[in-house]
Picture 1 (cartoon, rainbow, N blue to C red):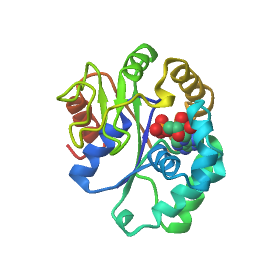
Picture 2 (picture 1 turned 45 degrees about the vertical axis):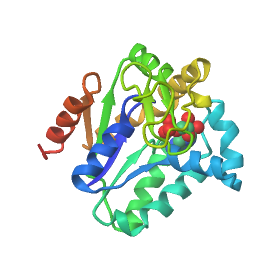
Picture 3 (picture 1 turned 120 degrees about the vertical axis):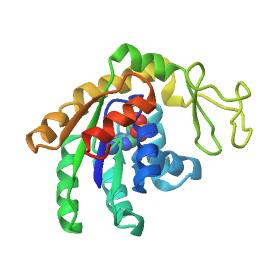
Length: 215
Ligand code: AMP
């Protein structure tokens, strides 16, 4: 199954990508995670992307397109993949079509998680992550066992630079102006499955499986 998980920041794409991996062994390809790793490791790409990400801006198309093309060639993508956070612009969506054709693959569905803006802001401002392993928590909805520390490696949790209130607002605006129109692009191709992204993660996952004919 070759999927795109589509939706604004904090829609729950990462959580649902992990559920899909657990059931179908299709890897999550998160351009945000790959870029954050590059920033942590201080690579050339990370040095370029870091300030843009911290400001809630997009990383240039050619960089993220290159990341995805390399990743899709990895052997673990033979049975499918879940793209999370890509494509975000029309040129990225068009490049994805060309690259999938080159690789002899095609998209099966684009699952769009629909969540109202107020909810996104509430989720975003409470998000905390582990700088060591990347595990994600929420101060109210998914708190760690010991407040402020990662369950997996006991590292002190922090708020991502781009999860600060003023940056959250910019990211959501950017989604509205540059990314949301892609829903139309995929609806025209008959691939779009819109899912209500408010509710329990388990219930939302059931709806996703139904929409994919896998329930
Ligand atoms: P995410 O974790 O998907 O919300 O991504 C975090 C940040 O990484 C975004 O706010 C962008 O700065 C950058 N980023 C991730 N994916 C893309 C993409 N497809 N195009 C441009 N920038 C991206």
